[in-house]
Amino acid sequence: MSVFPFSSKLPVSHPGPPPTQADVVVIGAGIIGVMTAWYLARRGFSVVICEKGRVAAEQSSRNWGWIRQQGRDPHELPIMMEATRLWPELEAECGEDIGYRRCGVLYLAGSESEMAAYEHWLETAQAHDLETRLVGRAEIARMMPQAAALWKGGLHTPGDACAEPWLAVPALARAAARRGVPIVENCAVRGLDLRAGRVAAVVTEQGRIACDHVVLAGGAWSALFLRNLGVMLPQLSVLATAAATAALPRVFDGAAAEARFALRRRQDGGYTIAPGGVHDLLLGPDAFRHFTRYMPQLRSDPLATRLKPFAPRGYPDGWRTPRGWNLDARSPFEDMRVLNPDPNRRSLARIVERFAEVFPTLGRPGLRMAWGGMIDTMPDLLPVIDRVHQVPGLVVATGMSGHGFGIGPAIGRVVAEMVAGNPVGHDLHRFRLSRFFDGSRIVPSPAI
Ligand SMILES: Cc1cc2nc3c(=O)[nH]c(=O)nc-3n(C[C@H](O)[C@H](O)[C@H](O)COP(=O)(O)OP(=O)(O)OC[C@H]3O[C@@H](n4cnc5c(N)ncnc54)[C@H](O)[C@@H]3O)c2cc1C
Image (tube, rainbow, N blue to C red):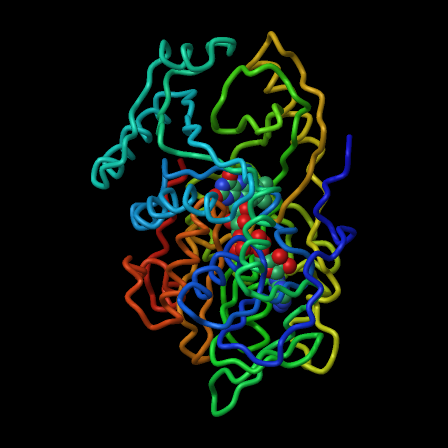
């Protein structure tokens, strides 16, 4: 089995050096940072992306590649529908193959209660004119002729799509760089230089960049970064496990998931397989600090989260990870260039077994690669897209909660408008930072 290629051993593709001045500095070169910079550059801003490790090396290369409208929170769906429209345009503009295709997403129900939840979500789809429908056993058999008949029915959105995460975000970053966006790898942002309370510069390990605006798109590291500024963000990160099978016959061409198993056919003829929404919460001080805020989520799907001691050394919620540091000294971001967790071996064994149960003619698949990824999550499973009111000039776009790849282009467009002071075209109230502190009830987005 080969090693997952996105680690700190990956050669630097964007060496810098960083400029000394820009209109906007974007922190983080995942899908959110790259897309934000892309649209800012289009609006005529000078923008630089600082990345502590490598472009897309954390969540943005490790995901399943689903571009999914199905099952989304009603407030997120319009943004996701915009992203679905943007992806094919981006592929054309980027000029490289990113594996984009409209492959459809199929949810598979093992019980009547799951079918009822799908039926309930149809109301959201209908309210937004999204073509989604319930499918019965016969139709599933038509879509997956070689699958064992294991399900009562399903939910299908034919317009949902996928792209190859290993290809997509690095290619989009290269295209952004060709359009004049400097990207600097190995360039951790340690903190902000504030003048009269507002952003005047970022302080990086490679020097200071004067700027009026900063966008924090730091994925699993955003809460730690904000904490050093005295801003609380109840973000945690959970370990998700995934694997890539070797090339196999085409038994299904799209993306499908049941409660504890998910698969998608990749462009290279293999399948990306994963244990559905099951993940491990590696306990650290923030997990305890924010526990009560996460109770609604834990209650809504108690078996999805396995609690594991302890968050390893150097992780964002590690026990010894410093929560405060001076900007002239090495920061925790430089100590962990790429968060590259080991996958959960038990989960891997289970998904290989499940693949064989679902497709008995194929049996247990050989794995080409397996990996872990730390998903940054929020108590209500929805992102934070907001200005940080305590720090004028700082916008945060983080907490994508396991579904930020597909929506990334539209979030980037929205954040760029926010920085530019233009109307963003969507109601962002549900995504405000203050929702966790203003007494609002925490309502998790639909867990389907
Ligand atoms: C196994 C798995 C499966 C998933 N499946 C899907 C899916 O099918 N569809 C979907 O839509 N989403 C999926 N997701 C979620 C999706 O990958 C993420 O929501 C998305 O990639 C988040 O993008 P991001 O840019 O916010 O964060 P990231 O991609 O994590 O990027 C953040 C970047 O910021 C950098 N950074 C942090 N702090 C600093 C600093 N101080 N200075 C400089 N750089 C910094 C980090 O090094 C990192 O590169 C999945 C995630 C995982 C792990």
